[in-house]
Image 1 (cartoon, rainbow, N blue to C red):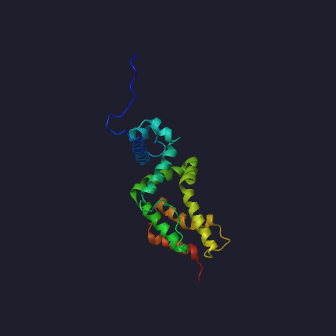
Image 2: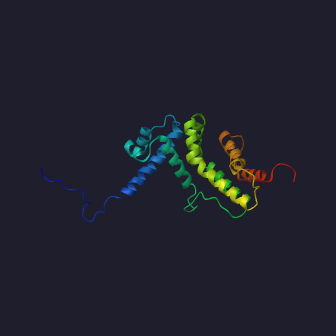
Image 3: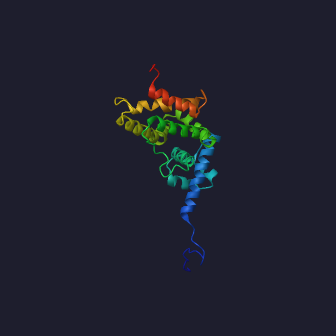
Length: 213
């Protein structure tokens, strides 16, 4: 048998950039997963369908993720990061200016902007709706998508407690729900418009209470 030649780039021709190729495939998979969950719903979205839509082999997907849920979780995280391109290396770091009201209002305003962006709104509604009836998926959504954000709220509220801006006996995990739960309900169930004014009012009500001062 003749000796086989090793695959070498032609003289003067750069070798293929596998990193660039992998990133292109990863981006195509993200886009395909988000598009399919909107078009056919979570139950009918499959690894095979995502692979076909993205133009990759399903073995490529399984090399990076173990399930369609994992693909969608990562696609959503990426989508959220893409929505704040100017936020720097830590787009989800909670601001701490020393003013708890201003900081929470700023974060909630950014959240409203994201919720009103069709690129985020439509696919996230599809996945959130499935999470209501699919307990396992719902738990994964909380653990992988929501919990990191909740932890940031908890950390900021604890800092406010240390600064004397929030009562020390308050449970931050319960307190944060005064900010985010009403907003999530309005968004998911269309019970009212969401706006910066609305979330600013939520913060004022939560921090100052409803009783006469």
